Image (cartoon, rainbow, N blue to C red; front, side, top):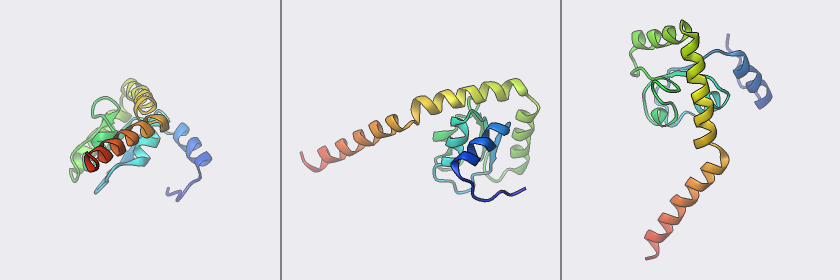
Amino acid sequence: MFLGQQDSDALTALYAAADLMVWPAVNEAYGMALLEAQAAGLPVVAGRTGGVPDVVRDGVTGLLPPVGDAEAFAAAVRALLDDHEKRRCFGEAARRIAAAEHDLTNAMEVLDGVVRRAARKGNP
């Protein structure tokens, strides 16, 4: 079933009803949807590409099979669907790490540091 674009209230309900976020992440630069799902406590199976490994910690918050390897991707999905305890542990870690490292305050601090370093380089 394809639900199309959803507002934030609907997404919250969908994440709460889900057991797992599955996204092949082909040519994915960062993976904001993956981050949102983890913040909601969902473990993730996504392709290992681009910035996805910066968002999903393989073996901690989800599984990252190689992009284009359909068998490995399916095996990763099966592994988490078949293991409730691992999904629970990954989901808890995902929520904890998303809150600690990807909340708005943290993002502002990181961006502030980047801008300050760039300004120092431009104005010795």
